Length: 92
Image (tube, rainbow, N blue to C red):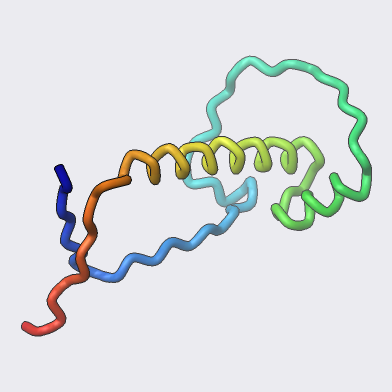
């Protein structure tokens, strides 16, 4: 069975990484663990700049958040397989 979805307006998605002072949702304080990883400094610094992170820890947390978000997008896309999406009528 094919479901049909009518799109009523244009949809645009903007990915913007807020700085730690601009976070929209409150940071949940969950238990923290201490781990040691041997990472190339150049890769860590590049990720920190790309993600706008103030610290290496923040860069790693943001990268992990993006990995989880990517999985959610893939799962959501797979759930939409078989759903027909139609453009809205442009005439009033």
